[in-house]
Length: 274
Length: 362
Image (cartoon, rainbow over all chains, first blue to last red; front, top):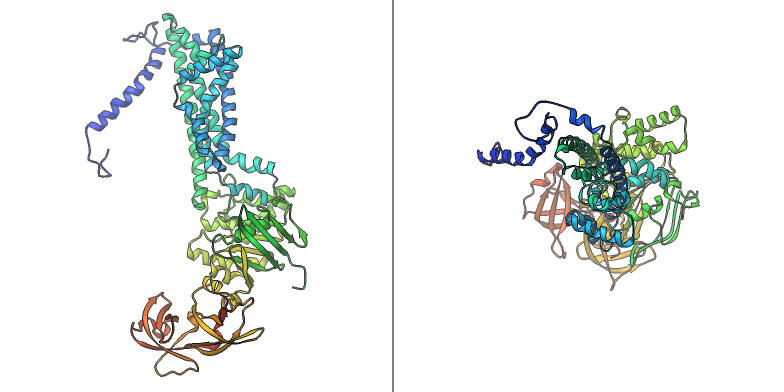
């Protein structure tokens, strides 16, 4: 907005950006503010500072149970999505095959389709098959949903991978397995870590699939939803929400830093290949 | 060649579907030779190199390295190492780790490994950059790392896939000199793939020129340049004036021809020569035509008129129309005597040596 590139300075543009950002982040900012408020209701003026809502989280067994479920689901989904994503991303970036674009499109589609339709369809199939709803069904559902996120990270990671690195390794006497361990894996490792973190974060925050498919074992978002019926539980939920936002932001930031560093390194390598 | 060749390529064919990438290629390369595969892109030179390295497998035929057939031997068990076109420096390792990469398999003791890595880096004058990462190196430095990484393995044959094509002109010329002296120092057989005729001429002991998957000619740089066997080879290796000549006599090795302006000459018959309707193509390189100044005389002269002039710094190309010739002659003259000042339209006399004429297959 400095007008450096010939765009005339405007008084309205900064105002617009401010309003826009406030709209995006003000509601989220309320969460931590009220989570430290010494009152059971979420109204101004604030009643004083307290950390008792956070302390109460540690004594809530149902919540800890839900957190444990979320961890199990998140880690499983992250690993499964990343493993499946590696296979697909490697095929897409390395080989030309019939239906390549269609396959890519179909894998990425869940990102843009209404999630609730997915959830209902999956629920129907699972009930038809007579499978009991459990964390396993949540994991299966969320893998479909997380795979596009894992894929987009992995494709950008593998896309810069230079095939001749593997050839050079073979040429220097290394076996195929040794080449994978000493060259392929370390070079794509940042993309893998990034994919794991993104999938985990998406899974941690995912509600609809978890709500439909979790049966009697709620994940954190499902637990929060259940608590909203009780006004007295609200401050605790706010504290929990604040913690989850913090974790999500940390994980996504970490994954983005890793992804960018890897991209920078590969680009430096690729600049010469051009 | 008296001793066993280091590399023997025997009747190698390579098909990709119906496309023939290598067409009945046979070749012997001696130990310690600097050998170049020269040709335009798609001529099969890289496929041949990759077949020697083990990344491509011939459809038929045999490849022997130091007397041993390597068909079916994977790249990691061949006594060859390769310098890749993009150098393929491992981005997650520093320079020393890159060079030590292949040595790890040999399980040397730590000091022995360090010595070999250090010696290899000194050989390419990179001893001071051991801790750098690939992205902190210039193009020329990366190339040296790739060279050191391959040479440290002490291969019987070093394969170089267009190693200088990514460098700018000045650096490329520097590296050519360095590559040549490096090869002399280590004494390893080098096989270089290139599309740059000057690079091949400057570096090689022998050159194989390839077109369309076939080897067109194998000879020393001087022979390839001065005595190309076909018009295509002559054209690929730099400028040449071509003209039609009538064949007046023919023996097993010699060819007598009559040309409109160069008169009757007897030339060496190129290998595999085929005459068409009693005519042959003969050629002369532009630098073998010389401008005659003032009233200087020569045994063999042509008279013509300058129709165009191109200035190239140290030389000037004069386009000279000689009456009775189908095409004007291109003359390359150094600028020492003022060839760059000859006005277009002026009459000039040219001198030539009949030995500079070559007969060519079409």
